[in-house]
Image (cartoon, rainbow, N blue to C red; front, side):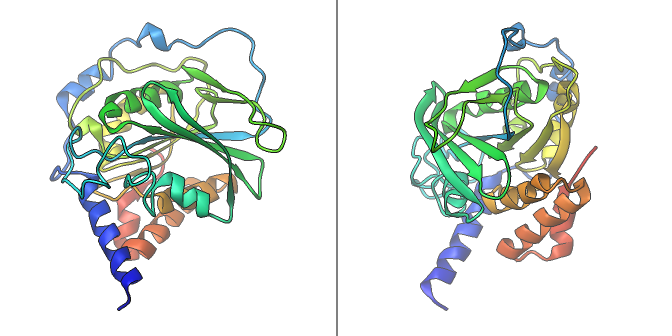
Length: 291
C-alpha cells in the first residue's frame, strides 16, 4: 500500500476518535429543562432595514477540534489545537471544512477574513460555481464551543443577523448571514454531551430555516432546542461519527438541487461510507432527516 492510502486511514481513524469520547448517548435532564427556558433577550432580532440577499446563503459554524477544552478522545496535538487554523482536524486538515471546500471543483473561495469576531479565528466565503448560493464558514476557537452552539441556535431561530460586507465586484456582494441565512450548520464535537446552555432561543420571525448538525448523536441532543428555535432538520445524526466535510458537501449538493430529506440523507450516507468504509447500511442508519 502507498503512503497516501495509509495517510487516509490514519486521518479517518483520528477523526472518528475526535468526534466524541462518550459511550451510548443519552438525553441530559438539564438540557431538556433548559430547552424550555425563556430566550435570551440579547439574541432578539434587529429591526433596522436590511438589504435582502440576492442568492441563497448557508452559514456553517465549525467548533475547532480541541484536546484541552472539549470532551473528546485526544488526537495528535496539531490536529487537536483549537487555536491552529492550518492543522485543525475540522478546518485546515484534509477533510476540514476550509480545506475540503477550497479544493472542491463545485465551490470557489471568494472571501477570507481573520478574526471577524472575538470567538471566531477565521471566516471564509465560498460561492457555488453552478448555482446562486454562498457559503459562509466560521472557524470558532475550540475553547469557544459553547458559544458556537449558542450562536447556532440563535441563527436557527432567526436572531443575531450578521452583515458581511462586499469583498469587491469580482468576489462577493454584501451578504446577510446568521439569522438571515437560509440554512445553518454546526460541525464539531457534540458539546451538549458536556454542558447545557443557560437558555435556548425561541423563533423570532415565524420562518423555518434549514439546519444540518454534524456531530455525535445530534438528533438526540439538539432536538428539543432546535424545535424551540423553529429550525427544520435537513440532516443530523443518530450515533457516534466523524464530522468531516465530505458529508457536508454531499448534503449541500442535495439541498442546492432542492432534493427532499431522504435523498439528502442517502447522499450523506453514500459519502460517509465512501470515506469511512463502514458499509452503506450502517451509514444510512447513522443519519436522519426531519423529526
